[in-house]
Length: 136
Image (cartoon, rainbow, N blue to C red; front, side, top):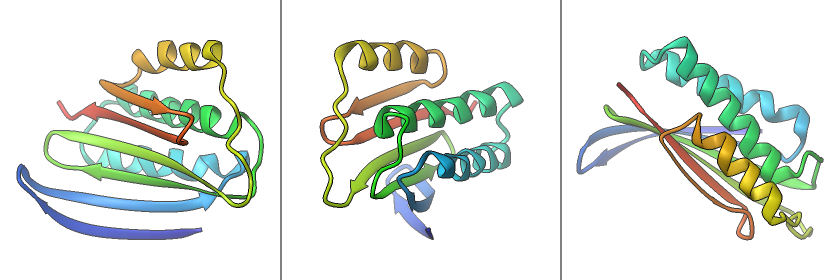
């Protein structure tokens, strides 16, 4: 597992960027859950919003990993500025095809995640999920 932080200047102001690379195994999802909860808490989100973000991380990993362990890793990037917390998950499986995602699974993911975050884009073919929560 590796962790990196970066301070980027954006046109809308300063944004903190925190990156985690974790093994593509279900047992490590909790690391991303802890990270998103910590970041959200430091930004003053409500307990409900923090729980929603934890669940969104769970759902994103479930979609990307198909509830199974894989060789390789998942890169998780958290970008937070004064207005929004953005989470991006990218599969980095080594020498293995991405697990197929059927339309029913993708639709179920979209229905669940829509109630948890303000914006979500999922591309399971490329192995990418991005979602965000506005900081109110």
